Amino acid sequence: MKIGAYDVFTVETGYVSLDGGAMFGVVPKVLWSKTNPADELNRIVLAMRTMVIKGNDRLILVDAGVGHKLNEKLSKIYNVDHQAHDLEKDLKAHGLSVEDFTDVIITHLHFDHTGGATTIRDGNVVPTFPNAKYYVQGEQWYWANNPSEKDRASYMPENFIPIKEAGQLVELEGPKELFPGIEVLVMYGHTHGMQLVKVTDGEQTLLYCADLMPTASHIPLPYIMAYDNNPLITLEEKKRLLPQIVRENWILVFEHDPFRAAGRVIETDKGFRLGEEINL
Image 1 (cartoon, rainbow, N blue to C red):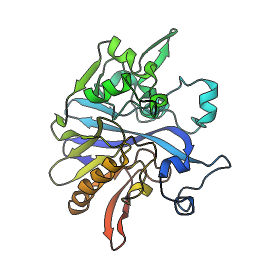
Image 2: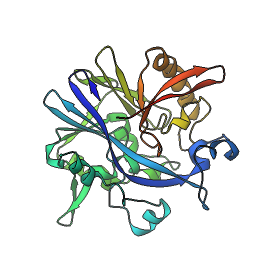
Image 3: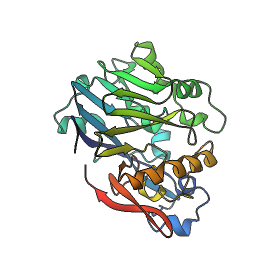
């Protein structure tokens, strides 16, 4: 998709499976299972979809999937599946290599978003993208290094400490236009300092939703993850953003939706829902 000076497209990196109840919080299984069926362990399949923005002499990746550093036990628990998709292989299919990237925007430092940001080379964990700057909100960096008991398991230091050690980390402080037409919006419901990525040319706008709305099923206001540290803040963030998204006809990119990459939102008498599905 062309937005202003940029070509924007998604790249699949594989799949994980997480508990459906945790993914949908207070919403009953009889409702969420209609769109996201669970396996015998009550897990639902989730994509790990990254986004590439190319233009203005920049090659930017947004998030990096789970990567290949998880041990066998965790890989089994999360049902990590790279058979159909893998970050580096799928980038290569687009004619891109990890050396080509100038920038990596990490929405937040949970393992399923930043695992692929580092890799093992010659026995050492190093940044996957050797020539890129990595952008993270400073508040999220602090939280990842000082997590609560609730979310400690989501932060794995090997996914982000090597980035700082290599001198490639850029800590951002709040909302910011990183490049012309590319800005980050900062959220606090899912975790402190999660950043969404907005690409716009004034006429067309695309928003990479990260874990504010990880799938299209999470568009309705009450559909909020139990993983969120502050679910009522998530609710307020959705109530603030969704009217603008509908009014200005934004395209949303769903990082974890296994069935669709992107879509628009409509408002009905029953609330906000997925409208037109979009292929990027």
